[in-house]
Length: 244
Ligand SMILES: C[S@@+](CC[C@H](N)C(=O)[O-])C[C@H]1O[C@@H](n2cnc3c(N)ncnc32)[C@H](O)[C@@H]1O
Image: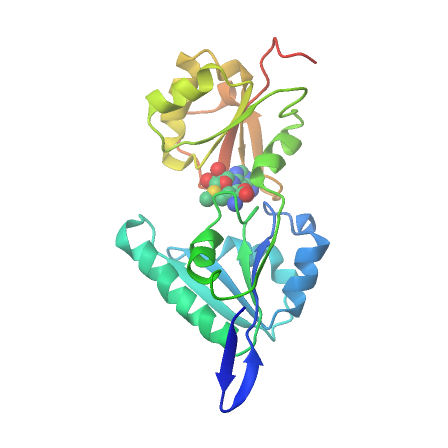
């Protein structure tokens, strides 16, 4: 993989580490992610808009204070700014890797499930050695905290991003054994109406900030009309007629 030349001396390039840090509870970090996190001289993490990084907050108790930190400021609303933010962060991370330092990129939940780490990985993985450590995804934390099984037997789990159109969501939900609807935010009232129209409200539960001290879990039909925070999801439980 990458070898950097430093004034006549060959330096082995560092490795790009994608660490899934789990859904929020610091105890849900894996032992492997913890070991690699503590050993990495450089850490990088996304910050959405002006907000502090959730991924960094999850692991803050484990940081020594000696690591160099690269905050990736991702503008809200996407457009061209997001691409530019990841391109610029990839260049900064590449400089650290060229200097021989491993860079641990912190990813809320799992890095390869809608994780922003993928935007760095796609820019850097052809040049540097990479290791991706799976994390406890919110996809799994939600059903666990709700104490509602997600799949059994030959159930098919359907994962849906809420920003999709109603028609697409309805088609996918029509024959779903169980489903998890992610990225709710401002889409919650529309998704709530859709699930009610499809007769799925009774099977659905809402959960926000799963595994954190301020977590909220409730049946969807007990929820008011307000939009949801970013870290929220709906779990559409198993069909009544599913084999047990
Ligand atoms: C961009 S995706 C990242 C998913 C993440 N990589 C994972 O594996 O959980 C962000 C969405 O994940 C869900 N999410 C992440 N953490 C959550 C939490 N602690 N509680 C509820 N939903 C969460 C929300 O639906 C949120 O909008």
